[in-house]
Image (cartoon, rainbow over all chains, first blue to last red):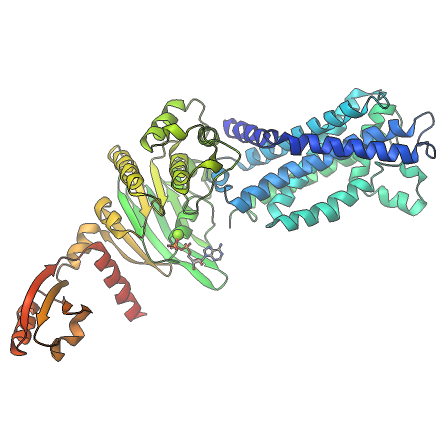
Length: 252
Length: 304
Ligand SMILES: Nc1ncnc2c1ncn2[C@@H]1O[C@H](COP(=O)(O)OP(=O)(O)OP(=O)(O)O)[C@@H](O)[C@H]1O
Ligand SMILES: [Mg+2]
């Protein structure tokens, strides 16, 4: 019954794996560069948590940021490419259910996010081996965070009709949300007003929860983060499935 | 037995343009059906509605008795559509493409049938070539193959022979004819009317979103049987004035003259004799589908 889902999932995996130099190696290199530069510039000034070096603090944040951006990129770019080249018809003509379509795109994007995340951790851990106090929290937030961004990517890919619309979505929504989420700093070092604003950003909870899994400390409780991230996922997933059901911008 | 395809008062508007304006007809199982019409008539839009790529503003479409919207999964399992636009996924080889397409239809071990399709479409030696590296006509063949992976009872081909060489046309139509003989219903659109005339047994003509003719090919041809044309070469002067409103075309001393009925022939020849002209050569044309098409479209232009 789920053969259609499985096939589309595998196709989506192969699509990014065949060009893994761009889809995996490139983001890992970018994260490594960020780490080298920021740790060099900020090492002496900042101590985010007592007893936690800035480099240690930065690594999980960078890993999560790369995961989120790549999960988003996978589903959104796959869809927009298929739409623009027109080969989306080969997915729209078969009897794939709305849910199968949703699940295949989102899961494949999650896999890409996880592969990139593992890559970032693998090439950076020599600088400061991560503590990894609660591996379960790490996994939960990695999966859920990627799930949120994969779903957002699906929505953006459905909505966008041109590559520049997608780029705008990425530059004006995804990048600010991830950069202002506490990847490079603990939000407790921020002025009060920015602290409040950061608490409205769901990406902050993904990164804070993920980091909690490593150090056992965070800016908020991991349970609180879990609630926010999970609710965000449910809301987005519901919206995405609704869009697919109505055929919004897919079936004219 | 349900109809293979049924359209019920299908309407579709793009902005202020009425692409489909109350289209209504059915196609029986086992038919070889041609959907004809000028550019922009609405053929592709109608086919898109059948495949669920486009939603009609009103009306209902069914495939093998399954509503394309409320029972979309069953409907889509029963139809294979070859889209008009040449599209492909540049990431994969021909075989990968066909394997994926089988999987989307829930098929697991489809290797034998895929091999059979590849062979019948002359694609065996391209099986492991990347889609990007294929010529346009080869890509078109793969699109036909993709529409057939799930052995659909209803096969719809939207201009499958546009930009395709003679050899593929032959192999393609031989293959499609065999499928038709095995019971598959075939619907095709084409601007090569001789193709439709040879292959199809029933024809719908679409113009500005409306069906303006719907009948068997034989009926359409015989309806216009009385309309023949006389090809004649004359010397000794120009065509008599009285025949000018019957003139279809003129080239040097060659005239093509419309005969509304066979009896008119005698009158035309008498006019020519009276004018003192000599007949160098002469022949009668039977109407072909192209002439029927042109005549039908013209009649509707006059009415519009
Ligand atoms: N997505 C769309 N948006 C706006 N107009 C459209 C759209 N799709 C089709 N049309 C218009 O609807 C009309 C019917 O188009 P359609 O493609 O169905 O014609 P067709 O009979 O297939 O023509 P052709 O022989 O050129 O393929 C045309 O006037 C076309 O411009
Ligand atoms: Mg068309």
